[in-house]
Length: 489
View 1 (tube, helix red, strand yellow):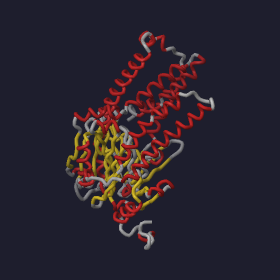
View 2: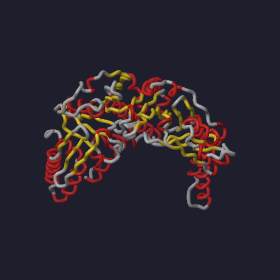
View 3: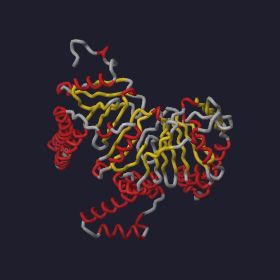
View 4: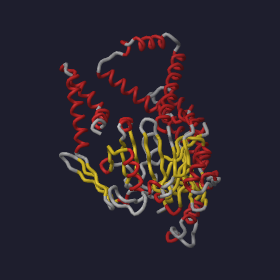
């Protein structure tokens, strides 16, 4: 770990080292300043590792760290909800791994995270089983074999054919934008003219020597190719070797990653449901992804964030199959949903078209007053067909159902989600009716839970239907709040 930690610290400190080099360039000693900063950050990384110790008892996991400011983190073992094991390429070279213990904070607070870095790969795997399956702590006598030795049943494995869904995730857009912004920033700070490079100068000369439409088309095509390649590469790096298994001790294990490997374990007793989601591009390609609705998991569906991933972008049928296996019931993932009626359709179109119309009217007024040219309001009117298509797609996405002990709600267009939530995980209901919803007899029913996104909505559902769903899902919970002579109010 003494060979790994300084390198990792230097990688994280690259922006700061570049800043020091730029500041020191004014005195002609930018390189020396950068070298001194690199040595300092490497020393800090080494000291951070040397001053970190941990201890595992039958009741607690304790971590002590810090040199000047000592900090001791203690987590009760019965509060451990997830164990995330990762290994960067440097870790893998020397046979080490990093173990992050999830305790229900959702991973949103870095100061509250309990991370054990520099463990042997075998020790990390064994520790994961001991913490999740309540086996004996390391070095303590165990009355039976460790739970980690129990067999696992495979639920899903990456099919190389799924890589075709990588370009439809558009994950390369963020990477491309970040790379372009960093390059522009460096060029600006170092006073480097891109035309000083022959290949860039030839490219600029080529684009300026052809018609504008052709130049725009070539740039767009080049960017599309780069985004597709970056998205495909990101998919392979993040999900290669993906495998979802169920442990007999009551946990789900997810393993994935090409260069940086990651293994996440989820206790099934913390599981409250499953969510199948997609985007318009992924939906057009017939794909979807599957995530867990569980307490104590970091939210997010990105390649490197979020411990709730159960299946990367894959064929929709596969996502539905995995959701059924995880839930133990295939019906919630495939059952038909109840549509929300013509009033909900009318509201979807009114909101989409009305917003565009108001913007166009404001721009037209600015044009008549001479404050704006005419083309903005004309361009806004051109968005009306797109708004109508978006409204129609948003309405088609609306739906709900009660399938046995599962509440199923679906909504969204740019990011459509079908959430299958266990009714015994619902801890409250919120029935909201805006002024316009009341005029249409609609309401938004929100099921609150301690898991996942913590609130799952049935948008623009009939008022009486909203109450029926809530009363059927959690009998008796709403009865004290309903008037006997007006059950529909």
